[in-house]
Image (cartoon, rainbow, N blue to C red; front, top):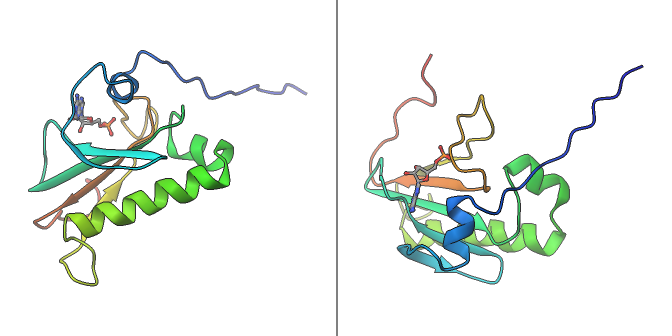
Length: 129
Ligand code: AMP
């Protein structure tokens, strides 16, 4: 029986790695020990923020499987804090869409895990048919 050996391969020359190293400027919204949140350079809604973990993870599935518990907690808490900062939380705002494009079929452009938080106006139906 053939076993396909798959491994997540993180490339250190991706643009978000450069942002984390301070080589490229960014419009920071929030930073903690585990995550950096900054405005998307090409916003698709009035609020469009990207949140990236500081670790070397390609995608959400990579992160979910290999990140340490404190990294996962710190990252998820940063996402919640960004929702509060943008006033899109559903307890006191109008909501948001969170997107994590992953890999080829997810049409991921930058191979460092990021979630998009989009809000400030309706994001429409979930996905194009
Ligand atoms: P994705 O298709 O999910 O990989 O999306 C990558 C996102 O990164 C796009 O929405 C881009 O507009 C955004 N982006 C690319 N370069 C930068 C940058 N230097 N600063 C902020 N956002 C960026």
